[in-house]
Length: 376
Image (cartoon, rainbow, N blue to C red; front, side):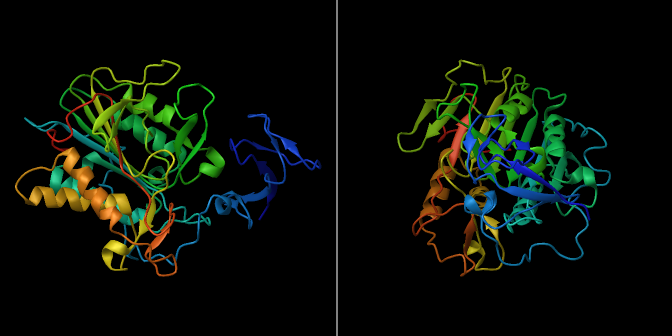
């Protein structure tokens, strides 16, 4: 197998050829980098990390062997998949369409074991609790055999475009992502904290990450009057991953203005976009087996969100956004850190003795969170 060396900037992810110099100036962000820029060896299957690489540097750990996928697994997509045809309209009912992405990063040190469980459970939630048709749901995961159904950067971007294509009043659209999230310096003056948030496709080391600016442009900007989009993102640094203009502060119970300093419009064309993220922009999220008595790994936010929704619906009424946040906050605060080697928690991010992640709610328009019911 042929290998070739390359360098990658640990700050902006720009790639270039190695030199003999002891320091290197990145051609993109112009930072002078010392030996933090290390050679990486790549082949036709992707990047092979060395010890001390970027993945290790930011705290990723190798989880225990995965038990998440049955040997008899075929596909979570309908046949033909949602790629082949637009979902049919259903008489007297809003059209429902969903893109579900789960990335396990199976070939790297930054592997996650809970994402496939998250994807399967969230798909079941949409079908069983919200009336989504299987042929209206597009699932991208590494377990799929069809290369068009792999969660690559290209496929995720095309899936986002498919999600909003031809949207009309009455449509209910859902984007779900479970995987790694990162942040990088913002050079366009449209972030209050100075950082762009990103999600990481399976090939992010080669093809790059997907920025919040791109997600906003693709699935928020086109939303017409009467269209509702929910984005549920279980990843680190995902608080404002859609760059929506209003962020809910749970402590003050007030909506906060999140409009960019550049005054660039980040809104819709009259539709409503709502995002629920695993944590705020500066926090980490966690994979844990705490809720299943050690049997399976799950994203903490995804597991608790699904449990809260199903419990709320079993009480003969839909749960409100405010009650949903309250319930998940209480449960997260009660989960102790029993340790990586105890198989309870694997880093998407942990500090101290507790899981430190606070769900973030944001929206294109403010609303009363204790009156509006959570309906997909």
